[in-house]
Image (tube, helix red, strand yellow):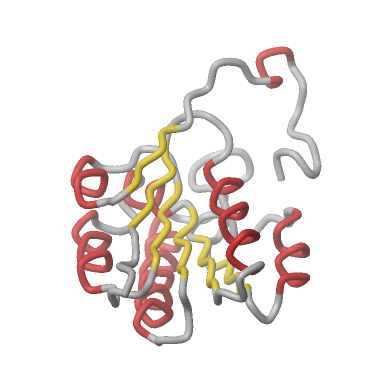
Length: 176
């Protein structure tokens, strides 16, 4: 019997969510059941909201967040973000323990910890209590050392060059 892995995609470079979605695309080819819970991105529209529906019933995406915290057009009090992050933790635990999924992706969970919306201990407990046959993927910059230590695979995305540095704005289908 194979043991479920804990995988972390972190770092300041682009591609953390994209890597998780690529893994999900591959896994659906083997008829694996995947659930992706998004902790931060919830209020904006982006491509994976629509494309994920094309991978159903193998892939389920749940956008829980209220959008990016404290930047751009965020008008929500931090307490609202904290409340919704706690709800995302509850949903995540439910999905991980349900027995319905082979892979659970916790998108932007590392950001939620870094922003003090949830605690690193809540994340560590989720990792430690996951069933042995579930692969768990955590994305987002600022992965805590304790999470890195307990994970089986950690990839750090490092930005070398970005179009934004030339004044090129986010591109549909590439960035969102």
